[in-house]
Length: 353
Image 1 (tube, rainbow, N blue to C red):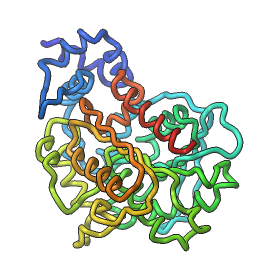
Image 2 (tube, one colour):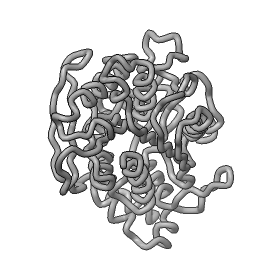
Image 3 (tube, one colour):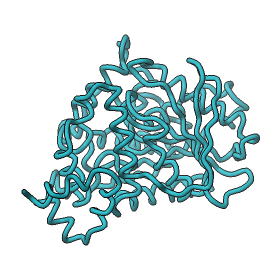
Image 4 (cartoon, rainbow, N blue to C red):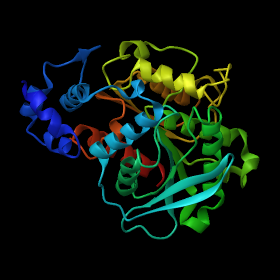
């Protein structure tokens, strides 16, 4: 039995964190021969996690959706659970399809009207919830010293497109309109998310420019965008979607399943509420766009940053070249992903100063 095989059982649960506390040479040995694609070398921590994951069992996209959802939440707790936070409270508002839950994160020591981030979780519009991204929100709140409002938007296939967009917009407008009453400075509210959540955040930013009458003038517009490996294009298949189609956590099979369920009854993939890359971005909020080097969404994330820059929107683009999709969830494991997320949190803090 190999060393990795012996570690597989221990990797289940929080002990995975201990594995990545081993000395770097040991992690390198356990990970195996370096993986190099297009001149980029996969981070040994990422490589080891992928190796352990491959020994754990079937991929989430091969499971029934309900089981896959539970599996994702359990995995998120392994790589991100237990981070300290000042306070966490849930609140339900009236959403387009019924009650819509928001989760409020207040970092330790923060009082009075403060900057905030309205956050949409990833998961391909079919997975993910407030618990799957609890650690991400805790981390961003504490590191950036902002209030974070996470949105439990409806998921497909039970609620296909445009339900998620409708919920995201409803949550954004509610937070912007009620900011003063919930300890938020209305002039310093960012919108953000990872993957599918990054897609929703980009769309909300575009909608805010096109629908100023929905709120008190320009105050309804986000002050900043935090876009973490955002999905921005349903129309075209980028090179990175083919290069990293398998073996790097987010797979073509996963993306195909997500699109199949999210786009039930939808024919126009060019809709602004699906493919923000193909629509006007003039006037949207300044942004920090971060991608992962070993991620199918790499190209479209970079393309969106380029589009923002070409339109005169202040944008900082960073490619975390050695990381994989979902590194945002890995805030309590290893050193590489937390370091990348600290850079993102610092950008958020700067953007709302």
